[in-house]
Image (cartoon, rainbow, N blue to C red; front, side, top):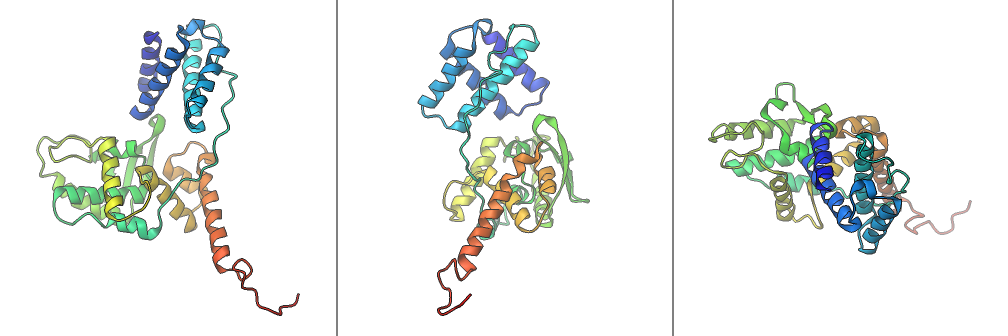
Length: 298
């Protein structure tokens, strides 16, 4: 059965342009399913998939994780059906579990400024890390997009950045002044390295930074800045989008900047803005504070 998975994974990488992280997740889910079912794809039926979904839920997997596994199976069996390996797609009519309604975490302005300003102004590592943090907050990039940036993607004269997003969809986004300045300083330090890669962000040996290395940089400076709770590159992406919305940016403009294919993916930030509005009401309105003046008559 590995031949089916291998061919499908090649299709995701070569034709669909899926990110390495997504490809790894799909492979893991498919291998877990085949270990559970113990069958080749032509023998799989709907009960096998239902049983697998039920087993994931019993194992304590989150609804988001289960939904992702089911999405992988749907795409996988749809591909096998289209290629003629199976006569029916057994995953087609399996409903996804209802997802938990969780709002993404974002940092306050003080928290994100504290993080961004922690790297020093001297030395390759500190200047590189400052550029990475400034760019995250200026652009809302995914960590995979950040790691895959090339020097030629930068247009510092126009303060623009070319980004290759999910599904190899290209978008052009503006750079803030502070991010552009940080990148200029970094490029000077980068030019002194030997054995350079074409990638923008490098380690001291001139090799490209990985997704994992960039994640570690974000976690490091969140800890140094004293930011409580779990902070990841995606937290900075949410922070970027939420702060834009709070300052009056249009939701469709935020959608373009984030590279969301559907506006529904961006609409979660309207809930964050509503939550802020409720917090403001609770803290400012006399009735919400229980401080209505005595003797007031309607």
